[in-house]
Length: 119
Image: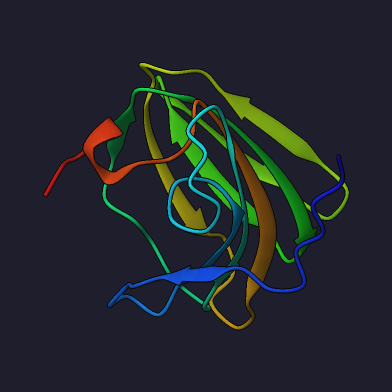
């Protein structure tokens, strides 16, 4: 069986980040994994979060900063990073003047109730 996705479903956000889910609970109803195309505006930053899923990010354009366990790394185009479930992590756009575009694969699928945010 093949399932082509021409466009996904947009997760509503108020911080300017666009989450376009191609596979997952919101768009395709599946819970074993989710795949989303992300676009983070310049200088964007999320609060720290603790997720109950593994997340693999692959950067297409720009630079994604990831902070966890007293480490901070920058992930650039063509690079990827695995953040294991149970890791307290903060994602941000490392650039003040340009967008960051990346893909996120979560296993099991992203669900808001699987993420605890520090606010």
